[in-house]
Image 1 (cartoon, rainbow, N blue to C red):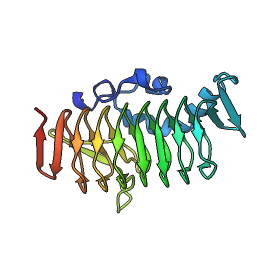
Image 2: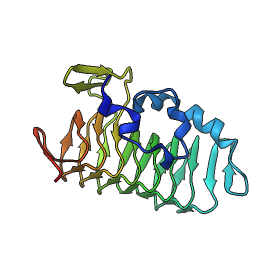
Image 3: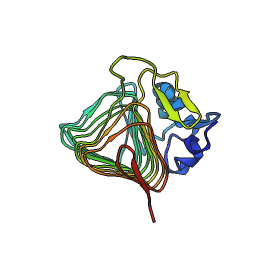
Image 4: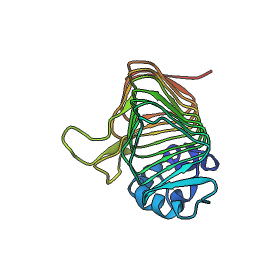
Amino acid sequence: MNEELKIENLLDLSKTIAAQIFDGLTYPWEALPKISEFIAKLGETLPPDEYEKRGDDIWISRSAKIAESAYLHGPLIICDSAEVRHCAFIRGSAIVGKGTVIGNSTELKNCIIFDNAQVPHYNYIGDSILGYKAHLGAGAITSNLKSDRSIVTIPIEEGKIDTELKKFGAIVGDNVEIGCNSVLNPGTVIGRNSTVYPLSMVRGTVPADSIYKKQGEVAEKI
């Protein structure tokens, strides 16, 4: 069992409406197959004076700001003071946290976005989890499917962790900064407070409090 990849060492569960989805789990990616069903159950408990229900499975906070051109597909929860900008494309099975920014032409699919995270410009977030105050620069994306369609594994010192998932993008820890036009390859896990340089192609794990400059060159933040 890898301690650095455990939920509590990557994500502050007090900063998401979805905290209970992680109950009984060890690693955050174990929650990915549960998102759709979890939203359906949680949505029915949300107070109607605070959340507007649209159709069967979309709940939107009455304080959220949603552009008319945004596409919203359920199951979906959008929390307080979130902003969904022009032509955002939310394909469903998404939890958008408090104070988040989902930017122009950004696409979300099967993901949990923690409070105050930002994906503000031309981003793709699929089968991924973004921690509290995580920020993706313009054009940064999560790649969620390997080219050979095989099961995603995570390399660690002891070998590999088999996630048992064919679709798994990235786990981005709290307060992580991803530079513009970077690609997080399937199964990438980035520890808290780390920074990834622009134009990076990230694979595997990045320790907490690190600066990822390029593959094989990761410095500790001082």
